[in-house]
Length: 92
View 1 (cartoon, rainbow, N blue to C red):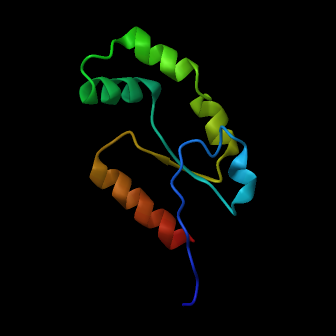
View 2: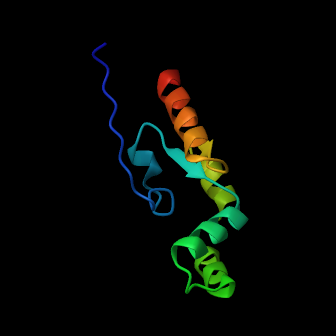
């Protein structure tokens, strides 16, 4: 259709205030408990206190959601996330 879409993956766009450099920002988020669980499954040597400190040093999910143009909740299966992503693409 002659339309172009450029996807730029960068985890610190919102934290750095660079969201204004883009037409929109898609945020993929999940509950804090899910973040902790996934991090610990990937890195079994990380304890909950350390992960909590990492998350406390970052912008909160609530603030990220307020700054984002679109939000996908990654709180289910990979298949569910793929369905959300394709629905988002179709909506553009």
